[in-house]
Image (cartoon, each protein chain N blue to C red):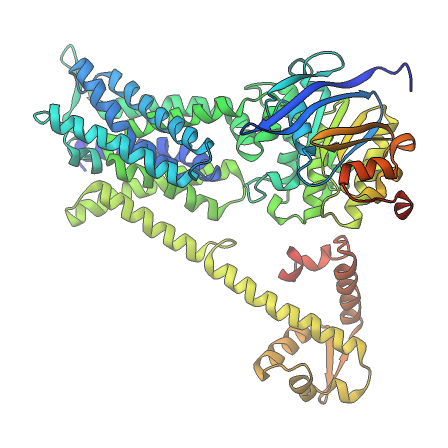
Amino acid sequence: MNSAQIEIQLIASLVAIACAIPGTFLVLRKMALISDAISHSILPGLVIGFFITNDLSSPLLIVMAALSGVITVVLVEFIQKTKLVKEDTAIGLVFPAMFSIGVLLISKYANDIHLDTDAVLVGDLTLAPYDRIFINGLDFGPKSLWVIGIILLITLSLLIAFFKELKISTFDAGLATALGFSPAVLHYGLMSVASVTTVGAFDAVGAILVVALMIAPAAIAYLLTEDLKKMLFLSIFFGVFSAISGYWLSHWLNASISGSITTILGLVFLLVYLFAPKKGLISVSYRNKQQKIEVSLLTFLLHLNNHTEERERHINHLNEHINWQKVKSKSVVDLALRNNMITLSGNIISLTEKGKSFTDKAIDYIITNDDSEIESMKEDFFLFRG
Amino acid sequence: MEQKKLAVTVDDLTVAYNYKPVLWDIDLAIPEGVMMAIVGPNGAGKSTLIKAILGIIDPIAGSVAIYGKPYKKQRKLVGYVPQKGSVDWDFPTTALDVVMMGTYGSLGWVKRPGKKEKKIALEALEKVGMLSFKERQISQLSGGQQQRVFLARALAQDAAIYFMDEPFQGVDATTEIAIINILKELRKAGKTVIVVHHDLQTVPEYFDWVTFLNVKKIATGPVKDIFNDSNLTKTYGINYKVSVQQ
């Protein structure tokens, strides 16, 4: 690895971390789409900032861009509050308008400068190591590294300072207000951080892919954990992982870095979506299937509980009487046998003590909905886990 | 009851959504130490009244005082149990963590909860019989358990006045008993409790004060004086017979 390669990966990783933090809260607040809106609508801010300073590297550009991101959020909320259009419609109305103002401004007045729309849309990391900061002839590293580094530092300090406030206002805005933590301040604070981060990530991944870096890592983490802090760490981890492996994928394919990073994010999400231990698709369908069998088991046990006649307890009787397929009867009987709830002598089934008490408890639960009775059963049966 | 201090006073409170009043000119004077039910049909503005008192919704007119001072100066005296459906129970956190949120108010901005706050939260969980569920993810709790977690969170606020928005809604028998026991304990400790309540049958049993609300205030006072056919009919618009209830 040469130093340019290391620098690119470092910048991509910092961008991923800076995006994952606000992204986690956006996902939890069901506001993923707003990041899309912000990323597009910072463009007019960038252009106007450039017109004022005539300098592409002026910090004023970041301020102006962030400002237009926040203005977008305000506009969306304003339109939505009139109740004349729904929230998603409001987002869909505002950001293309903002973005197109930027596009018009560039094509009319800034055709001759580096601000071309392609770079804005997909970014270009390969050039990042060549735009360096020199002070007194001393090389201080790539400019983008400094920009995203400072943004990340601010984001991290805000996160550490206001973690508790962000958590409560995300989970329960009503209580947050009653306790005096203004959710509006936190909301616009988060929107400002998201806007500034988007500007910082712009060079690296462009307006479209910055959305992926905000939302995908958080969506992946959400499927893997049930703890907010862990969710933040996991989002950061998957962001950085995709940034670095995306870089090498692009190296290998000789293709766009931002495209490769996003592809990796998509693949990781797909894997987690399918295989996550608790919330993954496969685990959920397995659980649903088990639950179905358990309902049948309960039906079966109730039947045994109600009927003492041998005729009713004959194994073949199950197929006819309860109208089950052979396969289903077998899996239910197997499950009951495995749990020592029944005994088989010949083809006659009898309820064991354990089976009897299980049935009684289950009936009690169904009647009273009092779940202290079934705590012990939750470990073994999905049915009672709510 | 005569010379008791007033815990909550509401003067000429009017709240509107999109210029349509949902609460119209409400006056209330709630004495310290009462257990008050707010009853009224759907859309009567019961939750809105609580939210306006707690500053969650801005009224277009009127004022609220908690022990004679504006709510903003008295936040620490007030505990709140929102409707269970008002939050996302898939939020990645545990029962203990939710209860800890009750202590955030006394911590103020930036300061983090520590050992003392954890102890308060654990005690609150114990009071509602949920200590063994402290590490459980909140989506894995039953509806009744979630309601008890909310109650524990309010207890962790250690307030003088409690506002509860339909705490009995859709709960199982265990939870209903747990909530009633907590209400009794709060009463014994001299707290004021204001509950949005749906089940008219249990009003005389659980509460000593009642407010009838239907956009306007119909009546407010001790249950034994005003919980009668005439007020029920005025509030619900149909002929009500208390005799059916008790």
